[in-house]
Image (tube, rainbow, N blue to C red; front, side, top):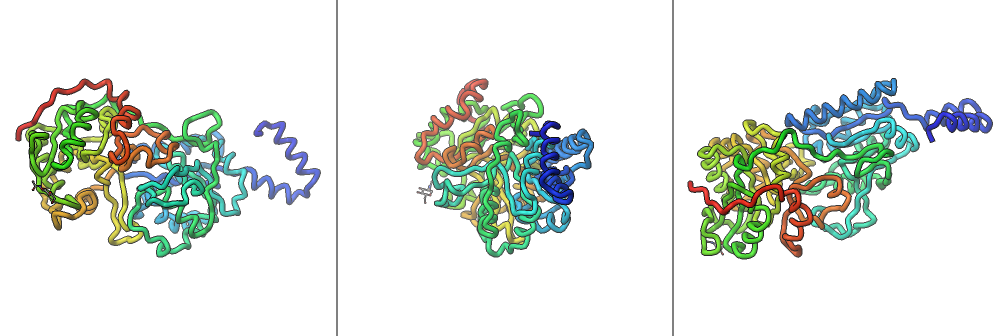
Length: 470
Ligand SMILES: *[C@@H]1O[C@H](CO)[C@@H](O)[C@H](O)[C@H]1NC(C)=O
């Protein structure tokens, strides 16, 4: 397609059938210049993530200079300070105002690998004056909890964020004129899905699937997601404390299951329950709650804070009794963060993100939450995290409202999962190495662990059962 012979032939054909003015117009449409594109990286403030986004920006500049062209503009969303930019919609007005002369926006993550020349080739095939949206399309096989059990499943396509997606300026501009009033959903769970719903409802534009926007790298790919790489050799399990949140009702059905799966690898682990019984004698007692669980999780943080101080643990991992982890992948992830900083890592959800005053983001509890020691101590010692009531939703309050009061922006990792593997699109899971899944409902947890984590975790020894005394 791109060879000079074909190019000459194309020119020749154009010249014999068209006038000069027409030719210039057609060529302008076919050949997109790098600076006709604005790349928008949905980046995060935390050092490791900011560094990745910055590296990606430099890669794009270098590719443009190798093409001897003016580079695309590259926007790092975390530098803008626009609240909720990870849900995309809050960025649209800024983008269409700031870049009125661009033809395309390309939205992606900090781990999206972009082959600039190939991407320009893909985008250049479309008429940028139209409302066009292209990406790697995902769809659900059955209604799923993470998409609010929507029924229009297979027909409804949403983009794989990690490969990025392109939108013409015209489309971004018309979306930016839509009011968020028509878009009041309380929970932001899967930003790419919810954004696709917004696009369809407000402009009737559907995502077009482009095979060259790939899930795995290949010679023809314009973009593909880069898999996670640890930042150094794996950290020691001795520095991590696992807290499992349970209650007497599940001592028999759930605790033995996780003890036999991931928990057998943990060196420091505690089970936090409403009572210690013969099925779980080692349980630590925390306040009993029937819903919301703020008092219970706060109780876990208090005891964990003591333990972390006494035994000098770096990290606290809190999971439910039906959360399944890959311990090895978790340790690898933690190599990229400094445990002396205040850090909270997990799967980010949003509550009323359309409301710029009261909306907030939080880490959803079931996916598992990782907190650094100084943050755990701060949450307890400052008193700013005291639960408004025992039944306040624990994750929304403690890992949302409270973190924001402490000035800590939660770190999102798409490798944590609040739901079961079957609740996610196949290609989505294929584009990453999951760290956690959640819920034992209608699934065999052992089969999930075997399929996703067992092989990776098999490098760890099985730990003898041990109980840390307080
Ligand atoms: C905790 O609350 C549940 C539900 O109200 C109750 O069934 C259970 O007995 C309580 N546990 C304790 C130790 O009181």
